[in-house]
Length: 479
Image (cartoon, rainbow, N blue to C red; front, side):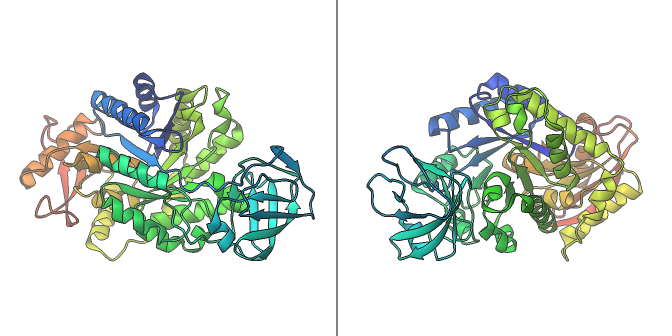
């Protein structure tokens, strides 16, 4: 199944899209990989969804990636005697360790780590920022606050801490159980980590995962922005999770942060996903707003690897239409005459490695000679990532003998992944590449392609060779 665009689409599965027929429709409409939200999916539901995705993959003959999104710590206040209380700006309100039901003066906060970490002057945002509190007195057991804005608070509302770094890690007991269940399937390609604050948060997960899944850090806290270079270095990919990011930071700052994160990931050759409310109105409407179309287009113009649908495909009334709309927007943007120039202007300088030099040369040769495609052999996936980092105008076919690699690369910009046996020698390498370019409908006999690989063949991370080849008259070999 050949896509007519280079940016990838990540679709979330849920009540509206969990049967196999619907998953196939979403894939045919344009979804390249699927997200399972562990906040809502039990382990049995997760395993069922994985099996259905793999059935669709087998039927369509194209690698499909699976992302399991861990819930992360959910910080909430306790309950109130009357469910809801009214507050006034300027009044005092206390969060404490007393489990008694709350009133208009105080409420239980069942998170001792927050009580210990918050300092005077720190902000506490309740219910997605609808209530803004400022800490005035802190003793490790109570936080006496002033109400800055907002007029009410009710049972179990969420707490956001834009100024506070918590001493605890990002994995809750539920997350550890979910991660164990995900790894036990041996069939999930990416794990997304919620509420990353610092690079140390990744250490525990890396130790548990041991390379069996790619780690995608969700950036949704200002503390993560402050140490973003270290977090990117330790992550396999990033997600710009604009929902919570827009709660903990000024909304007007989010577009600039999105641009900053995309460019930082492109510099490092790490995939980056833009997520949250991209086509929000399509949860209940068959067409998006003009503003949503512009939002999706902006992410594509910036060179994001993937764009994500959340409730639009998980619980909305028009999941297939949402995927098809996103695919259509992306395709149209990539045909825009300004698109190549914008992508070129944002292209990072290559790193001083052989693999980067080879990838740069492959792009320059392909564009100068107007070749049909770049074909890269990649076992670990690194060669594919470097080829994508260059953002070439011509298609990239990533051939891998490892199906897990092909699935993991399904989130990466511009890569058309094919599972293929390792070539036996250089002639087989050329013939196989040309044959796949034709069979996947990227070229025809007489076209020229450029092939990158490592010699000796099959050596991970040893990209050191380029070969230009003509596709033979039979479409089955190269010269």
